[in-house]
Length: 248
Ligand code: G3P
Ligand code: MG
Image: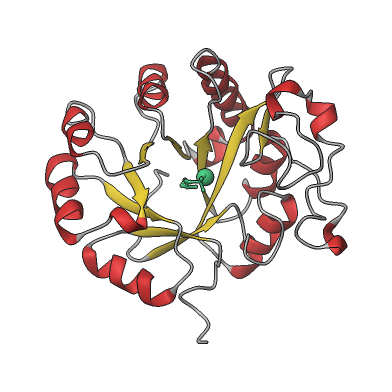
């Protein structure tokens, strides 16, 4: 079944990351328990060519050390404690492989948005190939393609060249009207931009030119979320899966 966004979707950004250590199996299990329809997480390569789920290229914020994920093997990554920075009670949290995360979600109703984090211009082909390999192995037959997105335009183009049926997400650091115009030949499934870039005019422009979903990151304030939805944003990324549910 092809992925889609129903109106006013909240995408659990890095799992239930306001409440549990981001991009860990625990944060993903809790997002499932919150009943979210979408989860986003970040995918990058290890030194030995495996895909792992982690946001920062460098250790330091989520784990002790100053290495880059790209300098460590999968086995070395999986020994790191990525929970203590958040709270000592989560010291057993480890960096998951992409395969582990896909296997966790495959039998749930949750849709996935994989954000590809390519460190260098020369590793993005490997990253795309290994991500697609893992999706084919653990996800595709049962669920169809997840949404694959990236800030790098070359990566989004490579996804299209690899299989044009992959739903692609083009992310913007800053809104870029001319890049939007260049995407008209093969519109992405979605564009994502920082929520501070969003105006009603921009969303109208994107939808007129590309007729695609518009996503905004990262929104943890309910009033702001409502304003974005009123501007025409289809989905927001939030660290708080319950943002639009529980009243404060
Ligand atoms: O995929 C949208 C959002 O996650 C992009 O920013 O830095 O949180 O990965 P970041
Ligand atoms: Mg991300």
